[in-house]
Length: 113
Length: 117
View: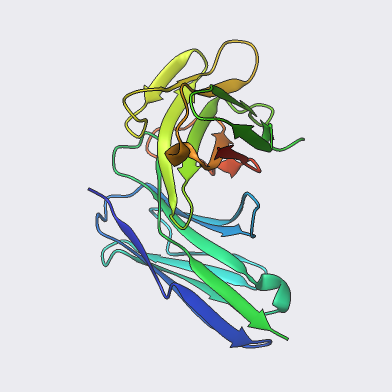
């Protein structure tokens, strides 16, 4: 059974700092991994999707890496801003390829001005 | 291109009533997924549908919950005889047609927040 874990559960940093969010999964047979952002009381915004054959994806100040063999992904945020404050969710498409996403519990990030 | 639309955004029901949640996928998307986010918990998959077909309902509670995605109109998540434990945010997502061996990005709607009194 696929399980996704995100560490840390919460993170508080000063503005301008570079930071790394971690995601681990127990079954390396995934189709892809997706990072989302969720603002309080809001829906999910897709940030990056990494196919299983890829090692990383970049979008602006965000860079996501994937190491399937070790069951890990990281989301790197450069030069953090107060507007980055949100909960970041990692999700994998499980090995059954039904399209089902399996989510981690999320990391709640606060960037202080 | 409008995003995934869900309505209502907030729904209040009394115990024993029925709740009907609607989801209109993005234009051109034929795959719909429903997820539930209980208070202080992560998102959990409920059901995956294509037009007129349920593909995977492994996350659906065995009783009181049903979902459909008809040929015309939005996808409906129906909860009969609601109980307080059904209070949660229900998110719908859609994606384009999947290609073999991969799965596309899922785009999420804003969610419906169900409160059962």
